[in-house]
Image 1: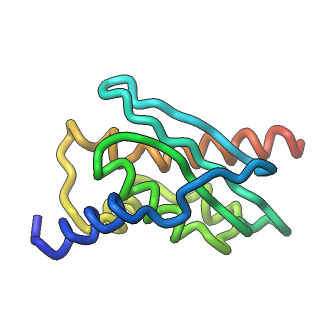
Image 2 (image 1 turned 120 degrees about the horizontal axis):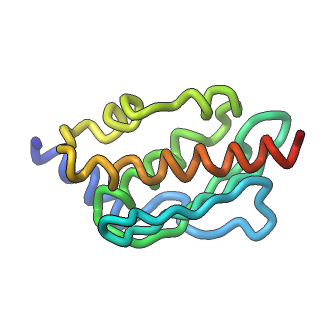
Image 3 (image 1 turned 180 degrees about the vertical axis):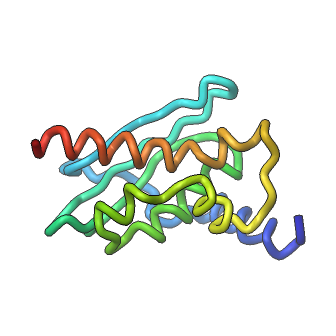
Length: 126
C-alpha cells in the first residue's frame, strides 16, 4: 500500500463523511461482521428513485469505517438502480488498495449494508 492511499483511508476513518443518523430514513440496515464484531448501519432518504441523502453509523477498523465514509460520498444523487449494481470491484477501486482475504469482510460490510437497506426499501414499496 502506498502512503498516499493509506492516508486517504486514515482521513476517512478519522474524519468520516456523512457520519450520523437519519431518523426518518426511507431505507436503513444494520450489519455486523461476525468475525470481528464491526458494525455498520446505513440510512438513506430517497426521492424520485434517487438517493437524496445518506448517512452511516458504525464502529470498527479503519478499513470498514473508511469504506462506509467513501461509499456514502459516492451514493449521493445516485439512482437506486446504479446503487444496486455496485459490487466488490467498485469498493476496491474506491479504496485504491489491495485488500487481502481476511480484510475483505471489513471493506465490504458497508456495501452489504447498502444492499440490505435497498432490498428492505424495495420490499416496502412493493
